[in-house]
Length: 344
Image (cartoon, rainbow, N blue to C red; front, side, top):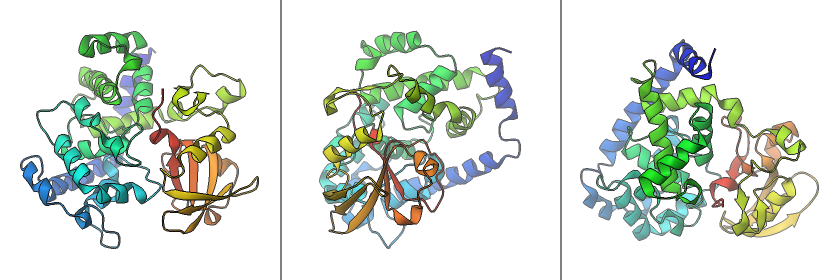
């Protein structure tokens, strides 16, 4: 059986009990209510009236970021490790309003929405996965619900969309080499290729884009998880360069994760590093409120489980990449440095 035939067969047997379909229907209903609550696409002038508490008001669920992070979790999950992400936007409300107006502008293409200067708000840069989620919520049919560039690239690879195709499409669309394209252009291009694939199959063309995303994550979950075998064999070619951070490659050891954490701890909302130790947990910090928090560093989030760390004795897992798509409910919050650092 060819790879193409295997994909078709997996599509035919996907979600036999319709549980994923039911979850999607519930998420689509919430998206409808979200756009009723925030009708900013049809009337962007309403954005001018947004207050700090409309965006972020802990203790009073129902504020805008509560929808983005929690209520709409079934429509693309975000891993937000620190409330400072939302506080930073609410405290820079004028700037955030300008970004929202770009996000809901029907005239602007997807790549321009993503490439808007979201990084001017602390902790909103990197792969811009938060911006992508916000855009998705206002345009529920615009793309599939995968916010990490690496995930989209892996999906293309597993579906037989070659690197040559990526290069040709990037040159045709933008006149640029793929690796030199912006985050937004890569996101737009990858989504276009994946949706073209979805629409080319009789089995998937009538699926909602978010349902197709669930199929991809379900089918290729193992391929998305970073493989420890690569590390033990010393393979480095699969790691992205991180020259801007002073590393030739993205982290391959826990010590290199510590190095990056030390460079970016203030950006993450941890004002001071109080202690670094060899035992568990690795780091004690003071956050922006002066509260002491305990942090365990890992290369991949899944290693927290492998090392059998007691979750109740730790506040945060800071890792390079979060390969634990559905962590246990009692786990510490996960902060993936890959989501906030621009790779390249």
